Length: 566
Image 1 (cartoon, rainbow, N blue to C red):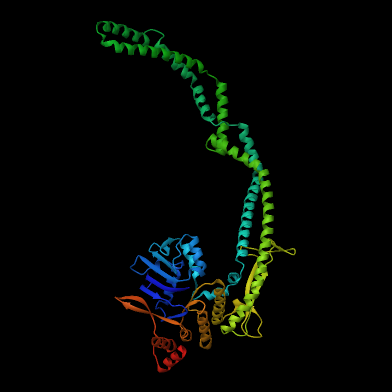
Image 2: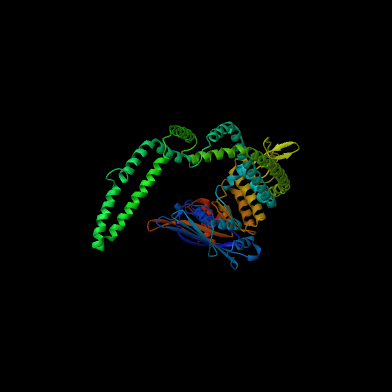
């Protein structure tokens, strides 16, 4: 399986290029700033990697990158993954496409079907291992060593099991912490809550009571006035001389005389009768109403005292009686929670104990697997380092457990720290010279040695992972001369098993490529453009001569170039 084509449009200083790739070992050369790394950045973006809208070529709204792979459908796990996501697998080919918009958003396609970028990234990880200019520095961080070890080891199921058990344990501990805090707060506030509950319960407010009392208070405070006004109204309506009722009767009598002459007044007579009935009803109601409203100073005093008690509760516990009652119910629940919380905590403690046992067992089992695989990695890497020009070296994978009194892994009465990766703290140790003791790999200061160790490790991991395409962006820093030639030969050997694409400044490496692409920056219509071309054998001689002696090509540099090309 190999990358066959890469099309880039409106990305950085690239206007439009269409690159075809061949199997084997391909080298890419060109002057600094010509755009070699931009091509790798574009490839990385098409495989699901990150970038920003600033990478869109100035004056354009969209950048588009598309890459094609020629592949045997039966032999690569990538196709089963694609099918599991409901995407078309294609017949012997795979096309990944991604567009970047000025908003910073992007869209991705696999074989012409829109897909989430997360799926594109997973597919990209199965197809290409891309090693950037500074990625070898990751070896100088011990925190990364466990990832390299696990990428080599054949125990992925155990890693996943440990991770699942760890997060289950973590979740249980978080639940216990939350409940424990709640129980602690409950106990700290119990005395206060008991006082508040008793205070509210002593008053025992009812939801609609406050407004009803206000209405009754208003009636009692105005009882004398109600009696006075009611009496006056009754007198005006019925009692005494010249009442409203008498006047209405007189009007009704006279109107009836007119109606006997002309029936047009019938309707008015009816309405006057209704008024008489209304006066009668009103008089009866006023009489009953005023009789029910008694002047009761004792009742008024009791209401005022009750309202005061309710108002005191509302000052403390809520703006309404309903809020006061709700608060009483809440603290009642809190007071009754303790027993339930303690039972739940007891249950959680039991579950945590079981989860610790399960996690500890899985972590120790994973540790044993790592130890077994570490011995194999040590042997394979020592052989690889010898091939990569670090002869007589020794390599050691150092595994240790970190003591932690609060840890969750128990061994022989000791407690050790664990996390989602297990119990192991892994650090690579190396001796690059015969007779020298092993030292932490992070103490290596030679950039050339770090690069070669990373290359050796990558070559081993690529064989394990069956990743078909390996891309190296200027991994040759710190090496030259014979070592550069050794690195080039190893890359070419690697190219017999994988497709290898390498950006390089070294003539020794460039001369060993099966294919050679040259990147140049030109100016067109006042703007910089990146161009790429495949070199013939004659053109390769000149290109490598430039790498040897700079722009001034001499017969000596040409002869050296021919020798490097063989």
